[in-house]
Image (cartoon, rainbow, N blue to C red; front, side):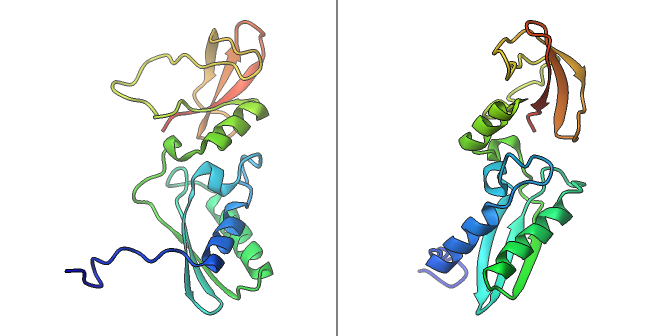
Length: 172
């Protein structure tokens, strides 16, 4: 027997789909080449009533300082669409992982010069040295220069073939 507690969630309305597309199209403040949808941090959008929306965001890590900027940008784009009441809620469980980055997001990272994380994230024991492909020339002969780059999510590497430094979006 299906009860209200066990009923499957209702399919999103056309308005919810439109609002999710708008919220998802907001660029990530630290990686503006990616949208929040492509990065996989937009977890949900729910129409609570006329002019009332709740958006669920999961930051890439618990202390991510960009969550405030993401929230403000989502609120702005939904207010511009005519939604007066927008609540953005941070959702920490399940935690975000690099598996949430879409294939389009991975393609854009590489095109932008950032080595994307490997699909599937790290499996099994953590390797001491990863084989990371250079986004500039494609070589896997790369060296880790620093475990942290411009953000905690990225490491700084150098390609030994073309000698160019590049960011690597770490698998989480």
